[in-house]
Length: 174
Image 1 (tube, rainbow, N blue to C red):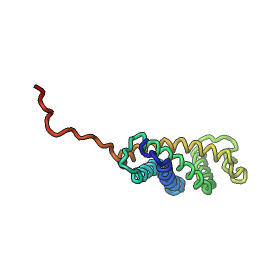
Image 2: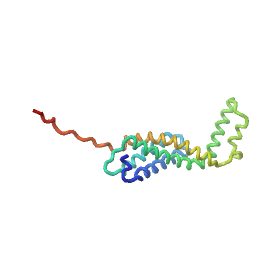
Image 3: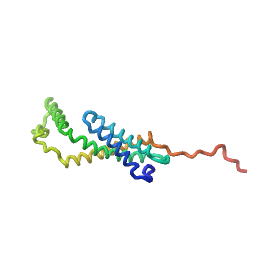
Image 4: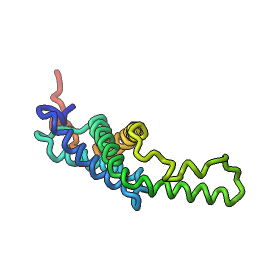
C-alpha cells in the first residue's frame, strides 16, 4: 500500500473530495442520469489527488486505485443519499406519471396502485428506507468507484521505476 505509507489520511481526504463531487453530481435530478459516469470520474479524481499528494515517487498499482475508488464510491453514496432527500416528492410524481402512461396503454395494473404514489398516504421520510437505499447505493457505487480508481491509477498514478540494465555487453569469461 504505497499511498498510505506514513499518513493514513493521505487516501481518506482525496476519497472524500472525489466522493463528494460525484455524490452531488449523481444526486441532482437534472444530471442524475449520468450517474454511471459521475462515480468513476469522482474515483479517478480521488486517485489523481492522492497521486499528486504522495511523496517520494511512490507507484500506484491498480489495487491501490481500486481501494481509493471504492472509498470514494462509498462517500459518494452517502452524499448522493443526502442530496437526493429533498427530491423524493419529485421522484414519486415521476413514477406516478410513468405508471399512469402504462395504464393508458391497456396494461393491467393491480387494484389500488394509485395509492402507492399518493403523497397523502405516504408516510414521508422512512429511516429504514433511507438506510436500505444507502446500503444498496454504497455497494453499487463502491463497485463503480473501484473501476474508476483502476482507470485513474493507470492514468494518473506514478509508474514504478524500472532498473536500467548495465550499458554494454557483459564481459567475456575465459
